[in-house]
Image (cartoon, rainbow, N blue to C red; front, side, top):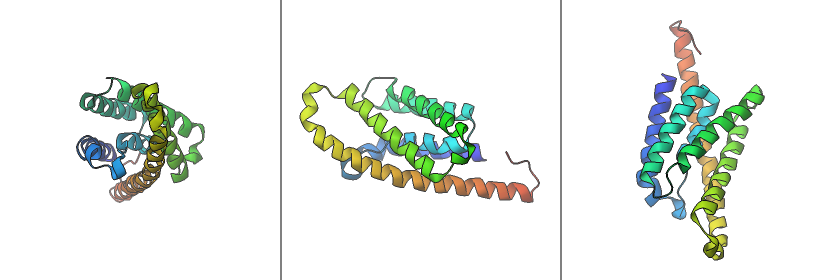
Length: 171
């Protein structure tokens, strides 16, 4: 149930990011919701399922964007593996502050990568506007990551309690 619900949440976030997120982002800032989902799901899902989710989300986002194909695939796979590695180093670090730190770090890294790939030296005059949008985006990322972490934690607890009542094995 946890895996099916994670896929459902991911597909909802992909659809939202493709349709509404690009057009109606807050203050013209589109949030990388799939990137936030990869960071949050890295706490709760096994590595293999996380890589499948990152690959699926990356293919859909690359197919719908006008940028170079493979940018989102590569970055989401990197995020999934990096977060799993960081969280595996210390099992006690699977808390909300670590998820927020990883989410903010990955959003900044993703925006830097987009700035290097998409923008050229001709757009250096717009760097101040770009940096202010980055600050707003990191703020909204922290809010979205908190909400998604709380939602997934709640689903994880509800499933565990239900599994205990029915005497199912909880993984």
